[in-house]
Amino acid sequence: MPAGTSRVFVSHLSGVRVFDPNGDQVGRVRDVVVMLRVGGRAPRVLGLVVEVVSRRRIFLPITRVTGVESGQVITTGVVNMRRFEQRPSETLVLGELLDRRVTLVETGEEVTVLDVSMVRAAARREWTIDKVFVRRGKGGPLRREITGRVLPWRGGGGRRAGGETLTVPWSAVTGFSLDEHAQGAEALLATFEQLRAADLANVLHHLSPKRRAEVAAALDDDRLADVLEELPDDDQVEILGKLKQERAADVLEAMDPDDAADLLAELPEEEQERLLGLMEPHEAADMRRLMSYEERTAGGLMTTEPIVLRPDATVADALARVRNPDLSPALAAQVYVCRPPDETPTGTYLGTVHFQRLLRDPPFTLVSALIDSDLQPLPPDTPLSAVTSFLAAYNMVSVPVVDDGGSLLGAVTVDDVLDHLLPEDWRETELHEVPR
Image (cartoon, rainbow, N blue to C red; front, side, top):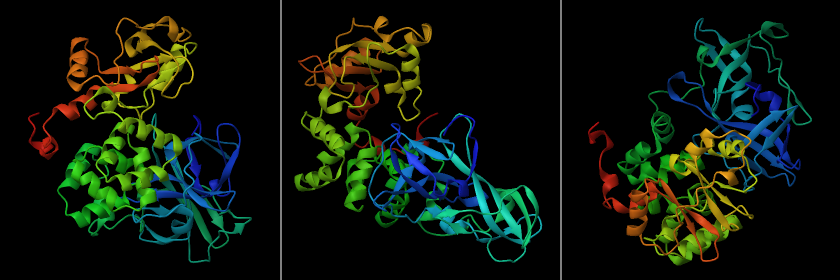
């Protein structure tokens, strides 16, 4: 969401039109999906429920919302059109939180929820619910459905028909959050929410298969994708096999392409084809290409989504791409300059520009003037041992992979190499036992 829009009342989003970057309408917002947390902590916003032209309701992750401006929502343009299905850990704000009776912590008085507001964390893309607009008294709900839009009374406090209204912090009321003593996957998930993906993967590995499946089902696609990448192969296959096939395909799309291809390779060929058929065509094409290479080669190790820029891009353009918080540090360490097309396989690969070089030059400088072309890229059939030697010899954290025609196919990062050099059971080690 844009700079300057730090807080949005959820009712203001109801019925708002959603557009892609080209200005084409995707649909209208029908609800906001949040995850409640234990201990009275503010809920995290997961995304929006959007009704598209066909009346189908789909899920739009909040990470794919780039702005809310003048009563419209702007997306990145990447929208999954599969029907929205609410998961056990998810709560709908308009459908489940508004009109709920909750209790003011300070006075013990029961009040009615009329609206809630969501706020963006500073310098981050995470949004949480921070304020609750409530009405004292026991009058009927003040919400009215008008042309599909929710219109509550709202304000910072005062008298309205039916009782006084006031806006309070989320922590000032009880009756929303999960019971801290609750059992089941929802409470367990809330407890583990602050864990890094690798730590949560370690916890999942030691759960019973039943509980592991419950927690995996409750995680959102992006979070589950991150966790799967950190699990042993057997656990990955087990978890993926217990998901509905449509969701399994969504999770594979959310994973790093090289990790998703490795997971697919563990499945029977018939199952591979079913899942590939459910994926977006360009995602499936990347998977097939990666699976065509031997596992312990540059082609089998690489990711197909490095940062690719055209020669006329500027340093400012490059730094904007590097700032993407979804990128691993290894991928953000350099950009690859290629002639169009920008998607891998690209046009002719011209060279690499390292992050440190980007920091030393003015923002308007063209990246084509900063190219490091001294180091030769690797062909896709380069064996793992040669890739490792290359990274070590030149102190690199990633290396481009280029085909015989000079097109960039992807990049191998040092973390991908480590995954294949460490013993197969290295993930079994309890992280808290590692010397600090």
